[in-house]
Structure formats: structure tokens, C-alpha cells
Length: 244
Image 1 (tube, rainbow, N blue to C red):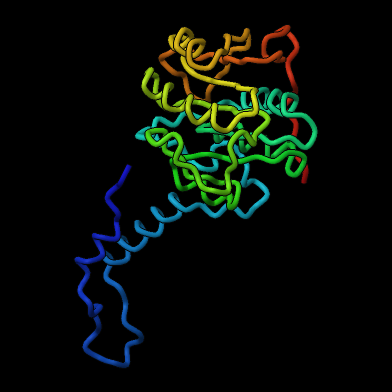
Image 2: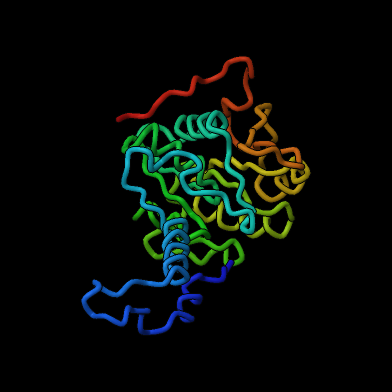
């Protein structure tokens, strides 16, 4: 979704900066208004194009939620549980697709780095900061994918439709079936259980995912394979730091 860019406010700044009458008083200085506009512009650019070169570049929340895009990140514990289940399902050296599930992607990269191959399919271009892992994706065009993405080339697809609507789930299901070799891990509202079973053949798990913020709708996980998410909930995975 487009936002008004603060760069437009810079057009109000005169081409010539305000200067002292004496040329000996130093270099020209921006007015306080111009300086404030510049600072706002640079702050906005940093928000939309974050610098992810540090050791914390895979931390959940380093790219902030955009509620206008219906973004709500998983808690670190939930992201870890989903990531570990995906790794177990994909197998050693497997390929994992995270479709509108950036928190899981980040946890996979934080914990496993090069142990698995991961792609992040996202509408939000801020995630292009992750380089070749990033694939631009719009669920409204479910089969419009780049040529480098071969059909049925992922051992498992982890997907989280951005909207609780059958239309959104139906279109994203086209993408999921195009990408997966068979296994599907879907995270969405409990109200989508019947539609999810019909479209993807998945069933609800015992594990209840949590987000960093409280959502108004009950959220659940659905799978079509033998998953650890459907086992004893008293067994919790510890949150550990990733490799340095």
C-alpha cells in the first residue's frame, strides 16, 4: 500500500538555502524547517529499507509490523516451534517456502542458516533486504511467480494468508499447491477450518500459535502430514540463540 513520501515536503524548500549577508560567516545552512524535513525523510527511508547487515538481521520485529498490510508477527516461541517442525518435515538439506510467513523465515535463518534452503514469498518489499531469498508475491496473482521458482520444488510450504477470507485462502491455495511437493503447514484463523480442509486437505493441530500482539480471532495451525505440532503440548522447545 502506498504511503505519502515525506520527500514531497522537500519540494517546498527553496532551491537556495538561507544565507547570511556576509560571505565570510561560513558555509550555507539549512533552515530549521528544511532540516526537520530532511530528517523525517531519512527516518522514513530507514524504516522502509532497513539495514540488515548486522548479527541481529533475522530477529523477529527488526522489520516492524505494518498493520495496513495485515502484518502480525509470531512470538519467538511460536516462530521457533513452526520453524523446527518445518525443518523436520523437509528433511536434511530440504527446501522450505515461507509464504506470507516472515517470522518463520527469520527463525529458520537464525537457527539453521545454510542447513536448509529457504525462500520468503512476500508482498512487502522491505523483505527484499534478504537478497535472493526474497520472492515478490501478491496473493491476488497466485501463479505469477518468477521463472527461477520451479513448480513443486519445495519439500514443505509454510503459509499464513494475510486475510481471513475464503477468497484469500482460495487464491493462496493455488500458490501452495504450485510450490509444494506435498507437505503443507498452514496458519490461519480457526474459522477457516472447513475451507482449509476442502481446499488443501489439511487438519487442525493441537498446537496453538501465539503472536507478539493479542489478536481478536482464534488462530490455529493446519497440516497434511504427521506433525510434531499435533503431539504432546507439554513438551516445549527451548528458545535458544542461533549460531554466531
